[in-house]
Image 1 (cartoon, chains in turn purple, red):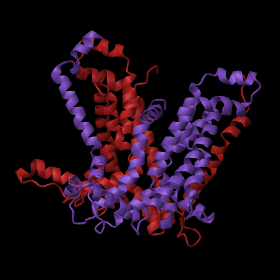
Image 2: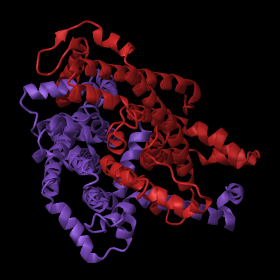
Image 3: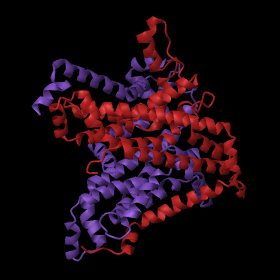
Image 4: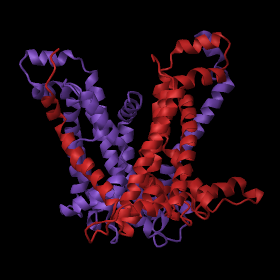
Length: 288
Length: 294
């Protein structure tokens, strides 16, 4: 132990200095895009203002002006897009968390023949790319009268999501087997064991699943692009594309302010729930 | 240790079975069927046999699209793997503010891709963007000029691949977990035997984290094969289709040209390619990956 730390690069003062220099540089590069976005968004509504000068020499008054302009723009209704995205996110996150927990229970605490095979089938469905099913889903939803409504974006979430089921199953498997036995001795069936014993112990894992699915909905571009037809239903992702398509007439400052509005909630969530993110991803990657 | 009945099990996973049937099995079946039809959305599909697949053979755009997707995928995965392992090694060092450095590297991965693409659209702007402005600031005295990022196929592709590196966060987190699981005794034993730092990395660390590399490469293949939103927003597929990718082509055939039959056949092709590549990676992994306890 002592021998290995003495020869490692971190022990000499120059070695340590080099490591901190590299870390600082990497952190700077990694965090540059959001800072850049925010700096430019401060530049006001003057189309002639060049982004960098506009951004860096901005005054507080101009900042308010930029954001007010984005929010009240008649061609793009950012507050509406925000509301739409939140609605879809709420319905999908609720649905996927509840249904995935039920299914994960069936894949972990209920002991039945064929469980392993069914689980592998479920995992392999994660490999089906969306573009493959995009066209049939569109025709099916069209025949159901769902095109132009939010339904295609949240109803499927209520039938469990393979990734969420996988994460929850991994977590449920870590809970001691004796819990189920104790429930059975108390005369509880699976339903009560699930609701009163397993779920309360799994709140952190449920939070991970909810968080990841929220990020997915917030991020999703192709789904809304295919299934939403009217501007009144656009999500933030589509709204931002609409904004971008008017490039040339739209100054960068406004575009960056609109982007900031989309990015701020997820960055805030990340800052608040960093550990949850990291633990969820480690679980997905190392227990797979 | 009583076993539950199959019925009980199926009942619990019922929601998934139902959703899987309606939203996956039926669409995949329909996609296979549509692939053999001429289908323009307004009219019912007409069976045309293997016409769509024969058409693929003579479709120069498809060739270009597959080539672009392959180039993007290979370069992104190789570069991403090397960089994320290096970052993970650096971030696993016992340093001050370790959790801050890790958070900083991970943070850009939580940004929505659409938002990131818009930011990079400005960053790469030849006149106003920070990329070329920094270039002028640092290298302007040499008389060199920053590239016109969206002006040529090479630079447009490079811009996309470069931007992808801001998304290595999840891979880094997974590599960090893998590095943490490398037994300390192995390190010590090797260094007592006089193996240097590089030798320990190549002969101890890399084999021990090889299952994690395999996992990340497979995820990388699946993601690269489906790249869509970022090129659409950043380059629009241009210039001259040099950054036009498979998913964009499927989307355009379906919803721009209304050719649902051909689009479905192209989608089926994408699925087959992903399956084949995953199989190849897994087979190669059998030879190259070291599993503990195996």
